Image (tube, rainbow, N blue to C red; front, side, top):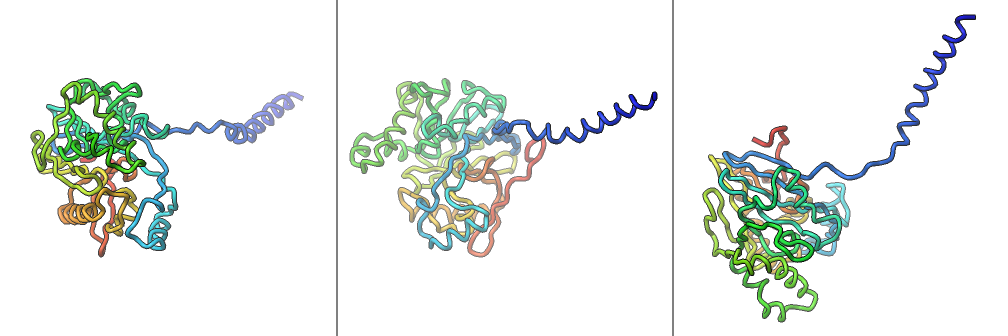
Length: 321
């Protein structure tokens, strides 16, 4: 008779084990991601990629200079179809003496899935007031919108903003805005709003590239996507990374077929810049960083026939070496 309580306890324990998977399966889905920052060393510098979020892009309506069937085939090869979820990335460079942010993300201008760069900057251990200089590849909202808060105040309270003089002259000109097609005027308005507090504070310093902005960082003109689109060459102790801005929008299409064009200010010049920069990066093997390649957007290129293969940076627990 004494064995019955023991047997009952054993059966109860087995029942708990059998029912446990069902109970665990009822846990709610959590959603979300870890904070979007990724850090690597580059010689004596430290580079932190910052995610502003992702946004679905209707690439079938925005790509041209490529046959539709070829575009569909390249997307399918990457298991993609329109719309393609597209990253928006910025890059923070700590030289040891200066903290430089290259592109600021969209802020609150392009919907709720973007505008996360500031939170990720803080999650990475920095504060916006620590940023000494902001370098813009160009003045589109997904690169410059994060300069200001929703009520138009400067996010980076001590930073000087640097950008190509031709870019500033074009997008900050009321005459150019008034001459633009009606559906483009909001792009001008957004650029002017993003730059306004920095212009008023005397903290905008346009440059005429190519030019060394500080030891180890150079601006190089790469016009085409916009009139003054620029890339930034970062070098330290023989290591090199080039921030390419909007040289690429759809990696699965434009790496294998670099002549495929996005919506550009001047497609012919944009394609020429892409071909030149692709060839140089593949030939010399340095890192490149891109705004719209899957986060963190840092890798290298390898030539493959008439196209190229994207080789993402190898993840390292303490940052890429």
